[in-house]
Image 1 (cartoon, one colour):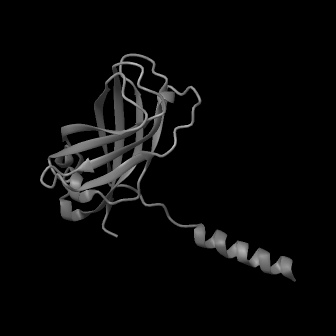
Image 2: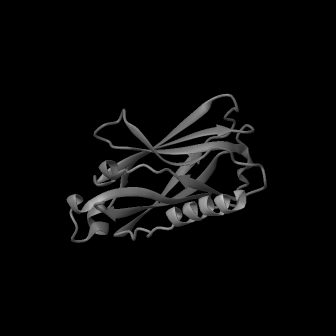
Length: 172
């Protein structure tokens, strides 16, 4: 009897989990550079601003207006060495926030990596948040704030390439 009830409950969860995936209207791609200085400590959290990044929203949206877009959500983010292979074990955690230049006191977390496990990785894959950041990315420009905590003092001045994308979805 208990076995049948368990099977029935499991079946309900499976059926409720099945759903249609949304197809994005378009993908917005970004590529920028982060410079990290040498000798930064492990006690403080460091904030690195990257200002005036063009969103190219009108180019990506083609004939769509901002009213046709229901949401813009983070898709993927990768950080890797700019001109050299970098071991990212020195980074403990990293967060990327998007900021509308018109409202500089309001930041929205778009990507994060809460714990970078030490495993000799030469790139970081960040997780996307679930936020709708349409209000920030329909503008001509966006500011980013990269927040980092280090595991060990930074080994030297280094340049890091941040590549990320966002998906735009229709009204829900």
